[in-house]
Structure formats: structure tokens, C-alpha cells
Image (tube, rainbow, N blue to C red; front, side):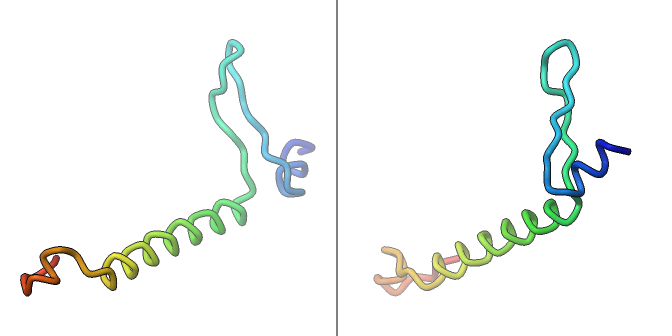
Length: 64
């Protein structure tokens, strides 16, 4: 239980096997936050790409 409490307290724990990292324990709230940030980054990248004219767009062609 101490390990779970430490993770919930904000620590990340790396699990090792034979001296090699084998997994990690993260607080699910932090993982959800990281996923939201990743989705937001993808969305903003697509918005910027859509608003940035490409050579095809300037010549009157369709840009997909």
C-alpha cells in the first residue's frame, strides 16, 4: 500500500527486472492529463496546418 500511496501523492515509480526498466506506475489523473495535452497538441497542429497556405493552396489547388 505504501507504493500506491506514493504514486497517488505524485511520485512516479519505475519497475525494474534484472536491472532493466520493465514498467511504471503513474497516478491515473496524471496520465489522463497527459492524454488531454497530447490530444490538444494534435488538434492545434491540425488547426495551424489548415490555416497555413501551402504551395498548392496558393496556386488555386485543393489542399487536403
